[in-house]
Amino acid sequence: MKTSRRNSWIIGVAAILVTVVAFPGRLPGQTSAAKSSGATSGSSTQRNVQVYRVDAGDHDLAYSFQVAIYENLIEELNKTKQFERVLRDGDRNAGNIPNLLVLKTTIEKYTPGSETRRAVTTVSGATKLTVRSQLLTSDGKIVLERTVNGEVRFFGSNLQATHNLARNIAKAIQQSTWSGSEQSSAMLGAQF
Amino acid sequence: MNRLFVRRNHRHPYFDGRALIGLCALWFWFGLGALAQSTASPVNANASFSTRATHLLGLENTKHNSDGTLSIHDHTLQFQRDGKAGAEVEITSVRNVFLNEEDKQVGGVPMTLGKAAAPYGGGRVVSLFAHKNYDILTLEYMDVDGGVHGVIFQLTKGKGDLVRNELVARGVLSSSGEEQRTKQSTAEVTHENK
Image 1 (tube, chains in turn purple, blue):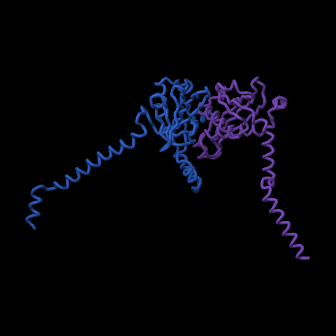
Image 2 (image 1 turned 120 degrees about the vertical axis):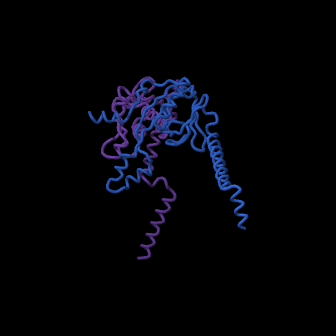
């Protein structure tokens, strides 16, 4: 009785080991989920995006911040691999590229901070940025519209806020249920 | 023995010591000059202007927050990291140059960790004094396809003006909006007062 129980236990462990070795990628739920979501967003990989320069509106935002948001945005969008090509503002090739979307960024709120104040007090001196990000089709239809925040609260320079903001915008675009098809995109545009 | 000693002293008192010291001083002086020449010449051979700078972001194939030498040659603006290949921007492609000031903590990550580890809030007191104003120089330039690029450099206070003036002298536009230098600290104070 004991031997048979031990044998069945050994067989069970061996079966688990074989499964782990044979299907290494299928076991963790997160991995498979991530892969499937990547597959669904595969339709959008055929899309291209042109990033426009940041519109500061009436806000007294330093040019270094505007340029930093723009540059970080291009870098972060490239990292997500959601778009086949990420074009810059003014790129002459944009006219020849099909399925081109345009990313517009408008500053809605800006709270200037101070690195020294953050270091001394911890609770004050945060640099905060709030922007409205719009993803538009070439004919001006809004595909995605989000209000995104970026801030630096404790450590790091003020420009770090632009990096965090760009990462959040790229993440918002990546996590949106926007599939890239014209119909669903129009519907989503209306929802946001 | 005694005679020999007296004769030598009588002939040139202190001569040997003085000559030796003078020779050493000359040798040191020329050696120092030669050393300075040899270290300066490789980087700035044809540069009309060069200064130390930190590349914050924007240049292709150059790490963010990397230190190096920013130099202006005849038609190019070059940033060369210490001992590595440099990145170049054609001055004719630069559309705008902006300058603002920013107050930053000095010492980087090691200093930050040290301040965090200091007991009884000692790190905060250090932070109160361990900050410095820097010039932030922002350039906007166009690539061959017309795409807009932005580059940001951090320079010692006062050096940003020099670089901007050099660029303006070569025909680059300096934005009127940035002529009034944006001071982060001032903006912050006004915000806090609201």
